[in-house]
Length: 636
Image 1 (cartoon, rainbow, N blue to C red):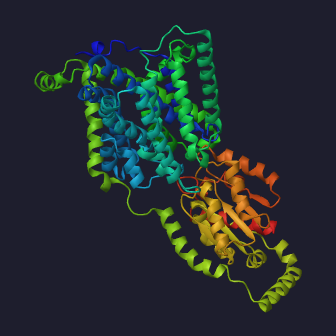
Image 2: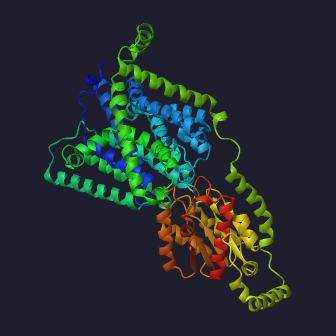
């Protein structure tokens, strides 16, 4: 039985291309300009709700017409639609990193296999991969977690739908059961989420993300597209349009305001957002409302039809582009436009020459085609060129997959080695940093300090300052400063020299530390008696942050302590300006906040940094530590 006969009542709802466009715009801008569209990640639950609705709607239509569901046929159609583009993206990406970015070949065999089996999201959970640590070179496959969740859904759902129809029969009962299951999934997200920690576990998990797909699926049982009447009352039309407009405005508003680090997101926020999308989808699906027309136009249709390819290729293109551009932060929007253009071009080529042709391709003739190719050859020059290029790319990718572990960069590089050695030294120095001098020695030190101040004031002026070391007078003053420093890998890179200058500085620096975890870390330091009167903070390298997160840190420090926040030099990331501007704004709000302007001091000195142009190299660390030390002394 052909598809047309089997789904004779199916209608193509053009407005869903507009919904897909809205979703993919949100996702792309969230990755490109996270500070401007901090809720763009909500595009994924939009995809989930639409997918759940459309897939279940087709399965319901098939059951109504045939009194059964052709599960094998469903699998074949899904594979033909999704696998060619996915496999092509995987192979092309692996070939690229084999040639140009071999450090990304780590675990490549498992990554490749888990994506083909649609279990990559669980691979990410098991390997504790973060979706929110934006610094470093991210995996070009990170975004594929959502496709794995959809793949798992496609595998089980046709069987589940058939069982639900057979045993529950009434659609209202089925809706209620699916809605309850969706609510349980949302509860799992709320209970497994831990405030102040990386939420990647609940972000990736099938158990904690399935509610969006289930809500769309539930809707299809009580709102089947083929049974909705075009002719409805004026009041009904008004209600549907009002609900559609309100839900659309709210969705866009949440795109702009709902931070991925807000506890509300994981404690019901994303669930209620998905309910909102479900209502929006219902208004578009109904032929008696105007929302389908509102969400239909040539641009939305063009983008919507290519949304799968856009989603597939967006992240690899961003990763590869940004690894080659060292000044993303200087022109974030210009670079974003360039990246978007490349993504749209590649996605269009994929849609025209891969996705559409292979959906109609007769795979039964594949063996015949291969046989004729080897026996008769290929006369068509374009076809011959395509086969040669394709075979070359596949060969390089297979080489990378087979030899990935030996090809990838192993061992520690210079920066990693420096940070590792600094951590060992810091552990020893931290033990002495908190020791307070006895009252007698303290008096002697103060007397000595005053005496030195009187007798050597002329020396301070006369002694020439070096940009890489403190003067004797500065060293003397630094030795009496008690401070606690907390930061990320940049602070870890320079902590050894800082502690040489400040023997009473306790340093807690951790690679990959995010602002949203810092407040709890600071509270723990205070509880352990390690938070001193002067607090140095070096955060913002790894991602932008919200004012609420900043306020939480200042609250954790307390108003009785002085805070010295080192701004960021991270030209390879587009949030550099956003972070530094926020810090300047917050300085007006907090009287105990001082900004150490490392950015302005270092921005014209690429020679101070490693190849990433973010972490100071051994020579640059001297400039970093000395500059920070002088700023601390000057403000104390």
